[in-house]
Length: 211
Ligand code: TMP
Image (cartoon, rainbow, N blue to C red):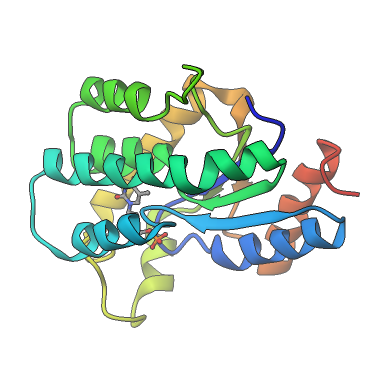
């Protein structure tokens, strides 16, 4: 692993991660760190084009998974790995856990194919496997998330899914956490924004990454 910190943020749509990602970026900057704030699918010109397709165009689950991993490869090479090599704190809104949760559990796509793609795409030039140092999982009941999303902007191909889809996605996140518990910090996202923020901040303070 490179000298920087690679932190990802996950949760079903409506779990409320965005506010806290921005607040964490400010907290790290105030502590004198260089922050690279980015997202998936996206984060590079190519990956942002792929994002528009994935969120809007009809396609099967294999095409969807391949486009997402193609976007990820470009994003890793052009943004994430160079930032980690500089020693930046990389805050990335979603990463591969989202693919296992949405494409794997949500869509029911073959987890073994996703595991193969994960190994290919997350191999760096010196052949080390790139994984986040920490994944902050905003855990929210799918019915509550649906209430929060109701009446929001025009839904994309994922936001338009029924609550049962998000129940499967949430289970997908729980499975990923169970497979690698030390990487995950689970946040109870049903609380007030202020309480959620205190919990998020607490994780980083306990790790010694923020004062
Ligand atoms: P966002 O709204 O949090 O930016 O995420 C975009 C959507 O893309 C969200 O509904 C989750 C979905 N997504 C996947 O289905 N698979 C993935 O691997 C990623 C990163 C996102």
